[in-house]
Length: 260
Image 1 (tube, rainbow, N blue to C red):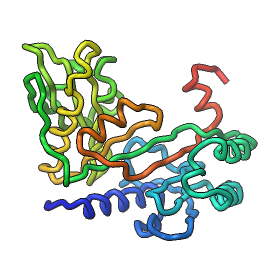
Image 2: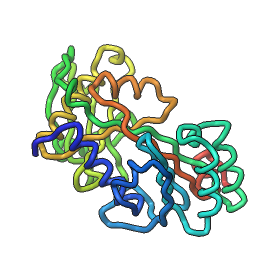
Image 3: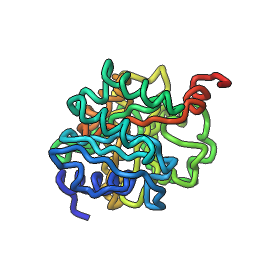
Image 4: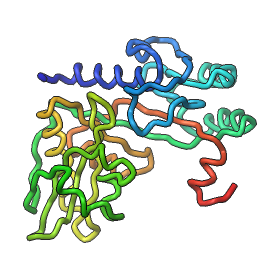
């Protein structure tokens, strides 16, 4: 497939529309959109649909994909504040406080990046780089490679690029086939090999390999993960959209290491 930045963005919006149960053009409207969240086999595999409340913005408006019983709460919130402020404190406390009465809490807040074909290129790496395939991953489902590979969804890990110091793997970028048209990149570098350009070299090379496979690479980072955001930008990616997701209070408590 011949990709352009415009085509890549359109593919991402079409996938977000599948995930949210809306139309791709809804992300370009001047007004906010509220839709019912439903399960869809074509959605990103790691999403537990339907969702109670998921806010998505490509910068123009907000599309809120919700459980219908929360429509009034979410509609009031996204029309009360400017788009960008709905995804940050202190405003998000308004939504969290309202949802908490429904036994929900804000859980995930993430920024998503897409490749910028104007700048994406192979970057130099001080170590040997090798292309890896699923058969090469079997011994790598260990904590040091947990960003690059996902043990819970091994069947989705389809391609990787490794950096080697001799015979020792010191950096790994791999991608999961989270949906039909888009593969998500994760990357890990051993601590003693960081700040040498390894992560960006692996990320950029894997992005190019994914495009060669006819798929769109995408990259996700938390707002506060400055190292990861810097890597995305250095590797030739640009911010594309943001999401904020509410989950049941018990789910949030479990993630925080609490029993309730």
